[in-house]
Image 1 (cartoon, rainbow, N blue to C red):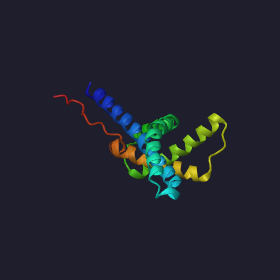
Image 2: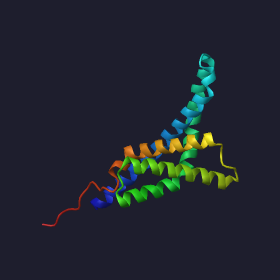
Image 3: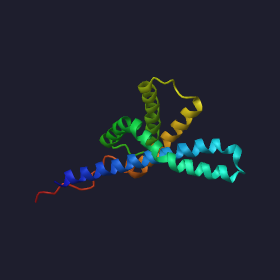
Image 4: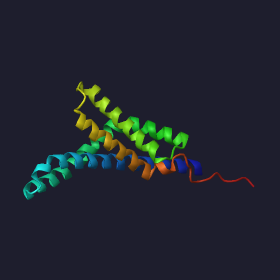
Length: 154
């Protein structure tokens, strides 16, 4: 029974890590995109207020899209990292890049869109590194570990 409870706790931790990574990656994308858009308007305080408001409104929406398009590949990576007990940051950061590239291709295939411009692809790939790093910080560092041990027979 204790092993079952530890698996439930681990699943909860993976879920929290995935949602946090999706929010963090979307925040990073918004940071890069809005930073590029507001670069020419640094002195205008009205424009800066608009940028802050728009970023606050668009973060949950973008996080939902990130979570939707990355769920299946991210869960596959989570299963692989748990099974193989991959705990390195590099594995999770590179996996974040792979998940981002799969999400780009899923988006393009699902809606018959062309591949986005290279600047957008670079922003998404960089956000994939952030996604993998946040996941690693919450759940990846302890991948493959079950914290509760089986009761010993005496």
